[in-house]
Image (cartoon, rainbow, N blue to C red; front, side):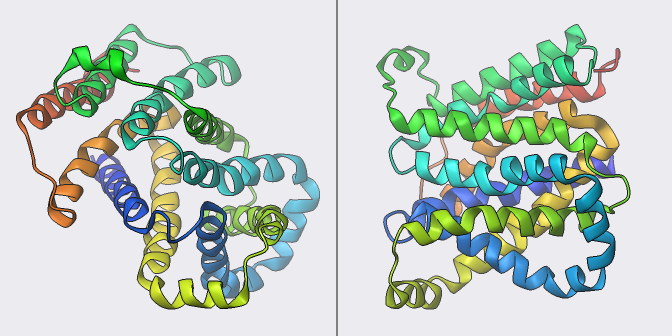
Length: 294
């Protein structure tokens, strides 16, 4: 039961990232937010990196390929692509696309890990996906025909595929590294990958100082909570209940996002939130607690 509580907290902290994203939209560009985020994590974890540098360097020499792939998917690409997509698409579209992550994880687990897909798992995923759609469409199912898609949606789709792929492939991370050693290794590699893209944007020194000064608390949150804490909790979940079941918790994100928007942005809670809650929790219950096992 402890792992489920920790995963709920993980998704709660991740959901706040959407609220912050709306708050700083137009003020901080995607490449800036992604780079400052992982630079902050690198600075915080640097003392631990130096303590374990020999062990990490040995793992890099022996497992360079998989570490580069995981760093690219989980650190450099995932959030950067999402931030780019949210500049051009609506939050509604992004949430709908994000709800596909558990399905992608299950399919990739079947193809790559040969994990058996139980019927009850499929039923649970579909039920909670319906809950997400119901929540995002505000209970008006007919409004789905009015949704329009643009280039931003494809960036969000790419982001979702990256995170689902990372969640499955992380099973192949070097066993010689602890979870935290693996994390700081991928952060370091991912930051190196982001650096040339960040520099290519040509941001001025004055602009970056202004952003760091005015939005210190935003960057601090995405560094400490969205990055360090959430990544640890997500890996903890995968290690204990597998990628498929862990991925199911992402369906809670639009639900938590609605409540956080109510608390901090003044958005109203409506009847359809209750309907979404029932469907989402019903799907998670089917997947996690009903025998047979997923």
